[in-house]
Length: 165
Image (cartoon, rainbow, N blue to C red; front, side):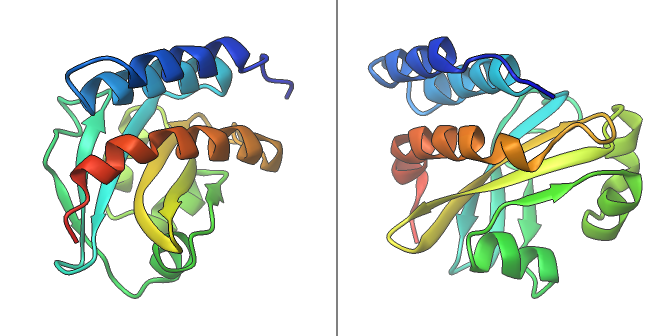
């Protein structure tokens, strides 16, 4: 599927970086930009806390279902090793992929989401957090990775503010 040119969305995120009330202003701009450039039904940003072996939700476009502050344990699952450990993105294309990877798959499905793109945000060979985009089945493609990786790089200032480990 051909996606729109992300130039205007990138410019909006860069403008948000100059504003006060960070990192929430940046995260809201990222949400809007990724919705416009790639598309999502559910979008969250998780911050990785290596010392606590947890990831914490610092942004959600669906706070009633996915409230801020929610934490997930970092385990030794294949998904965690890929995304958190090696810093490689993950694309789940259907409901079975979601069920295999996420314990909250029933809630995810109830929102109409059956595909996911998880993009790690990396700095100095370390995963600071992840951008998590979810949509209908079969929505995300390998061709989306370069654009989402660019937005992940634009997330760095906000995640560096929050990184404590």
